[in-house]
Length: 195
View (cartoon, helix red, strand yellow):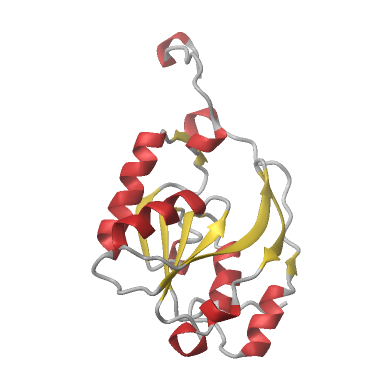
């Protein structure tokens, strides 16, 4: 399947192709190097999401937010509050099963009323996600809203060209443990072989 680049193809045919796609890029579980895990607390994620809103304040105005579920729900809520955006929509994309990247599936598309903004290409829409990794999900969502502004809290090098705004770049081999994926537990000191 041909996937559009960052600016994407316009028109209903391109969006229909994107909605009905199943990308065959399934990979085995990634071996996670414990020294390459970036653990993010709720406090840090909130600060980083507010920093994203601060950076986006000069990029708007935006009429609506489309958050990519599930990771984009939390930062989208914070950005919506900070920028006083009242129209919040979701695009539900499934592309990971724990640490394994799977076939990408769109489970819920963007509402036509949101797609119609900005001349049918989302020019006044802000897309928000927690992370851009390989860019696979970003490419598909860009195909639906090619003129939208795409923002993520974190970015990895392979996906970075797909986003307009992000706060922190991490290496491609870094695994991010988001606060909703973790719980409080004792961590042995690094020096004592805990890693």
